[in-house]
Length: 225
Length: 225
DNA sequence: ACGCCTCTTGACGCGTTCTTGACGACCCCG
DNA sequence: CGGGGTCGTCAAGAACGCGTCAAGAGGCGT
Image (cartoon, rainbow over all chains, first blue to last red):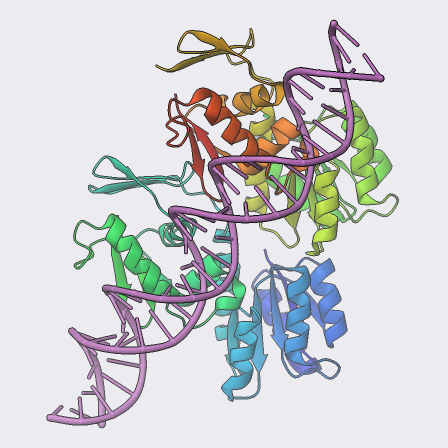
């Protein structure tokens, strides 16, 4: 189903994860040092990478950075430390998820599935979204409110696209930031607040009481037609 | 529906793509080295080629060049590298699209569809386009503004043609550059700005406030009669 | 060889868009 | 009732894309 590259210098963990991943129908390739990992990420075209930060040869974040120079594959970072310095740095460099050791195999599998699902959704086309108040035509990049055409900026379109990919579903801040501003913007900023605000002013009948672009505090936003 | 030539030296990828493409109603032929690819492109008359740059026998760009000597079939290039050197070179040589590994199969299918659609549109005849202010007769290469005949340069005609093929639709800068200046001009330049400007001065009632040739910032232009 | 037309290319100003920081309102929790 | 956190709002400066101009190169016919 998906090809997973697992990078860790502990053979036991490598073995455990390989078995679990294969049992769930994945194709697994492994690497036990940074250099091999970078090469494999480039050449084996994995759908997702599980990367332990504590490698013998290269600093974990350095591995991540190098992978990022050749690929936009989703990376799930493992770390033994609770210290969040690494975490922040990893997310800055474009890690997609972060798991602290010790972790349950089931949890990791779930995160792998989530990462694959997300990356599959990127790039999928959306047609037209209609509400009683406005219409969004993504392929033509046209938006009308009460039959009158309005202009949206490129970033506004990208945000709407990320939201409308799953209409009615909650989309996490993290995912929104990534798909609109790129993998390096995985954490807090007020981009979302500013642009959500702008979209509401342009699209909502009553921007003060949004009915379509709903905030889920602490989590993200939800778009309901 | 469409015949697709897939060129890759990785049998797994070849297999995956073949299955996916066939599942979507395409006819698939494959090649696993450069020489075979060039021959197949010439003899099997594919509607689109998916070409991996990392081939064992020939440099990928060399394959592309040779294909281009015998055919103008759209080529979608695959590469493991994110480094844009290859990308720029490939686009210069006339690749139509560029996908970095790893990629989602859905994304690639979408790009195949887009390439086929685009190439189907090129060469289609357009008759006459009329607005209340001017008339464009493409088959006769005649343009009149307020009943008075005016002259348009060849490049201006080609640009208008690319725009009028789908009246009212957004046409991406990338597509405009390719169909007017050729496949090697797939990226940034100010050709479009200069010529859009010139066309507006010749055709629009009020060139400062264009009503027919509309800019979509960051994306392209739209022609509305 | 000359002049004209077209295409190419760089430079510049302008308006729009993006980014960033600040601040107040609100909510949850202690 | 107070504190911490999150959200919405605003505004200013930076960055970006577009329109505009003009000079020069190249092609073509005369």
